[in-house]
Length: 295
Image 1 (cartoon, one colour):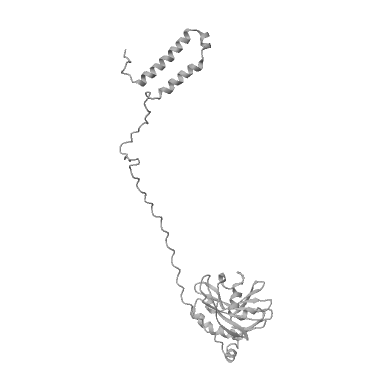
Image 2: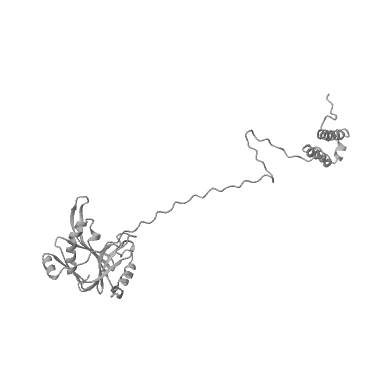
């Protein structure tokens, strides 16, 4: 039998003593019979067992319990801590720089508008001898046009009518298309607008047109080049943008009547072939020389 003398640590001695005390108490209760067990205060017995359980997790009396130290796995770097060790400054990563937007394209030079030089009355009589005459009292228009062209009228809104002078032709790339000679938009005014006598008033009027009635895509601004007379009525040579955001560079003509405003698109906007546009330009000038706005 192995002796449990001073060779045992103090903690083991205390645990053995408490367990022996609990066993002795139980044996004494059994020896005294059931009557004595009924008079025994069970709470005292449970207190003894509870104390034994609490002391089983404690170290020797008078010694502070030390926290367990875990050994890191091999290869783990040891980081020193404590107030004596300086904390390394963390350098933040630089935020990603957004790419700079491309610079807007430099607008090209505005083309010089072609001068509207109307032919003389004698030249008009010679050139229009075989032309057709268009006259519409309701629209308030009268003019001559080449006999091989057709006129198509299309209502656009309650106060605007579109008029196209064109003809069918065969294109080598697109097949049969409508070759436009002159395109017009007739605005039906309820009364004469005094603003339409100045370039500033004309620009304000064009900006106020609804999207569906404005001949300019996106309702862009117009540039008034000069004021002339057409058929005894004031007219403005203008430049307008071809697409939204473009500078005004497409040449058109606006003729002002008392109850009608005639917006005429000339060859610059109608033809992709510059040679064809140059050939038609003299004929368009003859048409303008015969134009009368009767309302």
